[in-house]
Length: 146
Image (cartoon, rainbow, N blue to C red; front, side, top):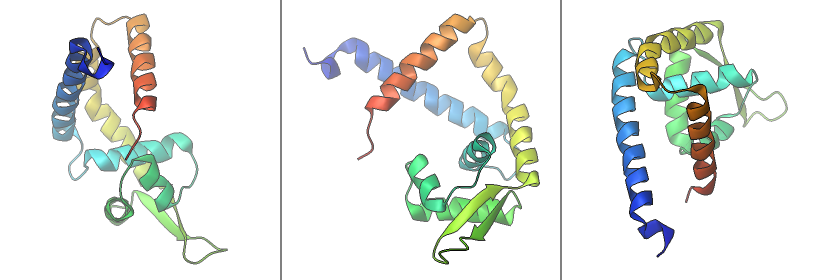
């Protein structure tokens, strides 16, 4: 039997999709006013890497069209959460960095999400969580965007 027809695999992906939908709905409700999950994701990425990225690099990282990323970046810039500057060597390119206000907004978002995340992981040992992370990362690496 092909692995894709395996009831175990179908059940696993069903659980992953259901968990994703529930988690997205709950997190969207607790995020600070005016912040979407996509905004948090970009801010968190920029905060973690601690460096500038081009809009094209961000679009690729999040598997979004450049237009969708431009929309998200426009909203984040309007809110004062990011800085967008031109590339001094090629005026057609831009670079995005997180602002101090963006770092604060990201920290506020994390604080607002913490109770939801804590409930989801309650009573799971660090070993089980690490194991789940490893399996999910391995599976994600096998899923290629089309």
